[in-house]
Amino acid sequence: MTAPRVLTIAHNHPDLHPGGAEILARDLADALRGAGSPSLFLACVNRAHREPRPGTAFQALGPSPDEMLLWAGRFDLFHQSQLDLDGLVPDLAELMTGFAPDVVHVHHTLLLGAEMLFLVRRTLPRARIVFTLHDYLPICPNDGQMVTTAGALCEAARPDACAACLKDRTAEEVVRRERHLKTLLGLVDVFVAPSRFLRDRFVAWGLPADRIVVIPNARPAADPAPHRPAAADGRRNAFAFFGNLTPYKGADVLLDAAARLAADGHDFTLEVHGGAAFQDPALADALAAKAAATGGRATLHGAYRTDAHPALVARADWVVVPSVWWENAPLVIQEAFRHRRPVICSGIGGMAEAVRDGVDGLHARPGDAADLARVLRRAMETPGLWDRLAAAVPTVPDMADAVAAHRAVYRMDAPARSLAG
Image 1 (cartoon, rainbow, N blue to C red):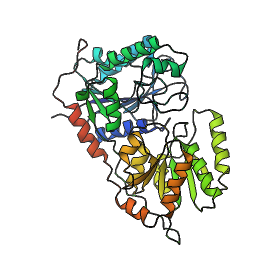
Image 2 (tube, rainbow, N blue to C red; image 1 turned 135 degrees about the vertical axis):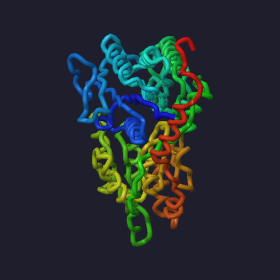
Image 3 (cartoon, rainbow, N blue to C red; image 1 turned 90 degrees about the vertical axis):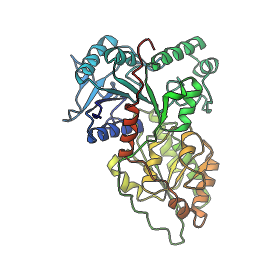
Image 4 (cartoon, rainbow, N blue to C red; image 1 turned 45 degrees about the vertical axis):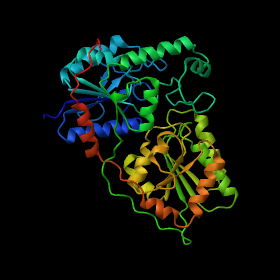
């Protein structure tokens, strides 16, 4: 069978905003192209990343003809709606007609707008629409985190509860938002979920279970970073955090836990790798103060390049993922496993699914610095624990696995869903 032509659409470009979904979307597009599928990667941007250019919604990013930027600066976050339909629709329709993809693989409606699914179906009636669910944004109007504005984990979206959480929205608006999104998502042929946990959340919300396929995220093949030598007493006491510094990633909880250990006289290092781009400056100031409270044991290194990750993880024994939201299938966990590092994570959601407590990592209660400090202490002080967990780290799927799994989804025999369907 001829390799399908694939248009991949993401909500940003990893060179401009190195989030996990953006990295995974481009890696898959590159891998499809390498496997013989003509593949175009289209990344949405707004003024936070690029200024608009007169005359077209499209911009180039470097010399590659296989990647483009779509400036989509007028976006309604609550409704997941693109407000500049007059500007974007003609350009996007012309692009789709010219490229003529067999598959349009959407990785997010953020910036793009959920209405674009209707445009895809109208412009390409025979194309297959595949949608990877990277977070809970269709379900949760609070940034897709399923965490209330008061900081509590949310089990399910309900109009009255969502209105009480958001305060400036009514239950009627929440209902209209849900119906609007479900109508447009009804045009999708197949959804991809990187974790069973996320799939189950969307099934509970109302997406058809038989249209959601679980495909674990994959990473490009790479030689594992060497393990660092153990301390003289055999302890493994070097911890690392990787990721964007947002309120949901739990870096503040980790630094509080480190301060507790430092106050008790424990010898360890904690290296925090990640930037706070597009965040309130007060967050960076607060994290710096918390790092100072560890007495020099914790260091904030700032943003890092993806190709620098192996050298950075080589300095660590453990990778810590202390997120305070459910997560889905965090890229940082797969990166740690790829380099044979056990993971200490919050024992909820996609993290608990990926990391087996006591098998290839350890769980802590989310948002609980005291419990995280207990787990870090256990990691350092339990003889033989690190060796046993590191030996059990699972193999991470590579991009060849991802290409095969996605091509199977692209080839599914069911006809493309019609506008009337």
